Amino acid sequence: MFDTRPLMNARNRILAIANQKGGVGKTTTAINLATALAAIGKRVLVIDLDPQGNASTGLGIDQRDRMRSTYQVLIGDVSVEDAAVESQIPGCDIVPSNIELSGAEMELVDLEDRSHRLRKALGSGAGGYDYVLIDSPPSLGLLTLNALVAADAVLVPLQCEFFALEGLSTLVRTIERVRASLNPSLEIQGVVLTMYDRRNNLSGQVAQDVRKFFGDMVYETMIPRNVRISEAPSYGKPVLIYDHQCAGSRAYLDLAREVLYRERTMAA
Image 1 (cartoon, rainbow, N blue to C red):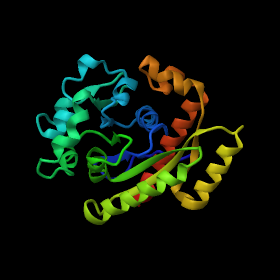
Image 2 (tube, helix red, strand yellow):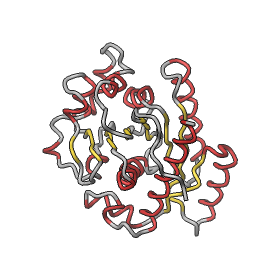
Image 3 (tube, one colour):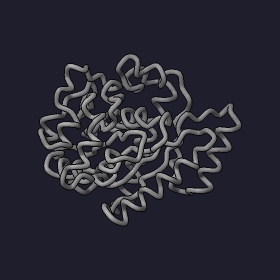
Image 4 (tube, rainbow, N blue to C red):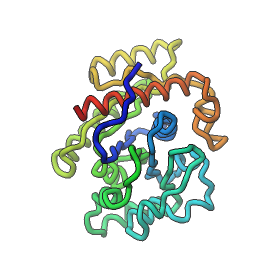
């Protein structure tokens, strides 16, 4: 059992959920980790930085409630507090995404401090939350760069399938470049293995290879391939709300405890 006592520092922690490869469970991890942290008693803000808006949908935010979004936050029209809306999860709010965000990469190019827009917005307006989780898009463009510059640490979901390590090494190099030039305090909080199928020999081999390559950086908790996890988004719910007793829900609660344990270890 992981120790879940509150962290000693008063400032919130900002975690970017990132992987430039799509279909690895990034958004699923963002919304369910946020829900699990809220269930443990943390105040959580999710920043939906993916133009697809899946995190917003997965937390039950209707399109009509996305008039103020991450797009307006990035271009400086609204503050984080004004854009944040309550989700159906007590203790978990979200700054939603809408279709306008799809053109933000081009607009950001001409803005001052284009890679620091989210960092500045969060620095002046995310008080009151213990954790801010940023759901990054599946690319390494300006939106993801803003997430990495704003974050204290990166949590990397990694699907237990072939070519998994190949994409991860690219992300690690990007994180190293961001640390060298834009955000020297950025660290990797951990790598979480997703869609793990114990009946599949390939899943076991990928997990073994990842742990061999990254060592203690890989969380002990693995997120299983689970039907209930796949079904939950179509109902606009995290799996912990859709079916809190399924294997996927239990795994995300374990991941939340492990994240908190690592956070305290890093702060010590």
